[in-house]
Image (cartoon, rainbow over all chains, first blue to last red; front, side, top):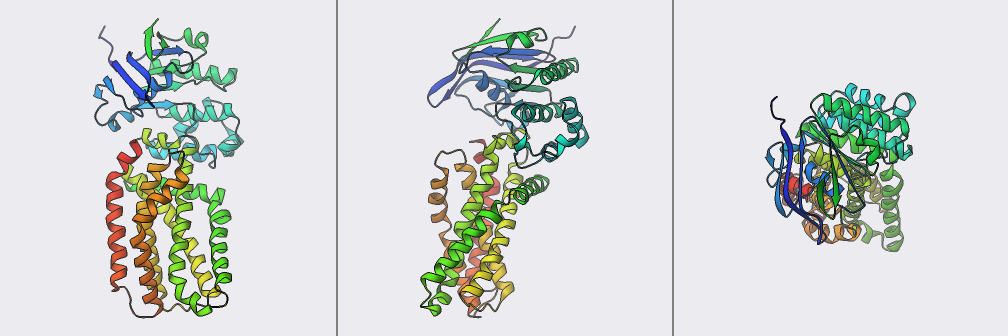
Length: 216
Length: 221
């Protein structure tokens, strides 16, 4: 069997946020076609680690390579292969769900239909598509955000606390789509407090502790 | 770049059409400024005509500050600015799109402002096309600088105060040139060959080029 391609390789990385080391000599890696679960208490560095992989966070020491690209240089080339869902929804409250999805599809140059298909998978259809995002519940907004991220069909998807605000049905959708992504050779990294929920589908697990990622 | 610019401009204008912040908040601000000055100089109508060009540009400048802050508060709302970076949109396109969207809003505001100056201050405008041209180019100059500075300050806790502090000194040449160009045009002295209009064009072109080249680094910070 051919060795699996390494998607993310982080070695001895330190990230300072306001003088505080959010990541301290952290090592972390992700291979293709796997679901990696990251657990850890609040402030342990989960979000910073995901942002580092997404190329929206700089670092002070160490080495970060995503898809073989050194993230010390231009990070723009990597971003088209990476999807990220953080605590914030990255959506516009004054646009409807449909308009948000169309905007995202236009930005990414993907067919609108694909974005709507994923929205439908996450239970967003009918009148809800014409509701302003600002009037949706937190759980519904999270579904839109996840549908938008999955519709990119990118090689690496980074999900930061994706279960927050989601109901049981939403969590089921999330697991199903994550598994399907892995089957297609894509990688999904999930930082979550709901360790038990994702543990059954995760290939590898990390525990964040004081800015370090410990393999479990 | 042009595709990204179109996507951003359409999105911003669609949000404005829905939220009506320009109509409900900035337009009343312009009206209040016009009325306050009309009352303040009520006894000296001739003076109002004399200072009308300066008042026009000061009001346009303060209105553009509000419009610019609104434009970037949209991107801070749900960290949407991060999304623009993640989607890999051309930063130059984002910059141009933002400039276009705020320019459209400002042109509408300036039409209202001009009408206010004509009716409240009894100012006679002769060369409407020249006036419109100098106003649009001057506003473009303000926005060319303003969009970059707004992006730089949008993450700051004190963005409401930092943006005017940064922007006002830099766009002082627009205020001066715009006022002079308006004075000449009202007096029927000069047209598009007016050197003050030339300065407005130069300022807008230089800062548009600078903004287009540097906006990527500004977004990343």
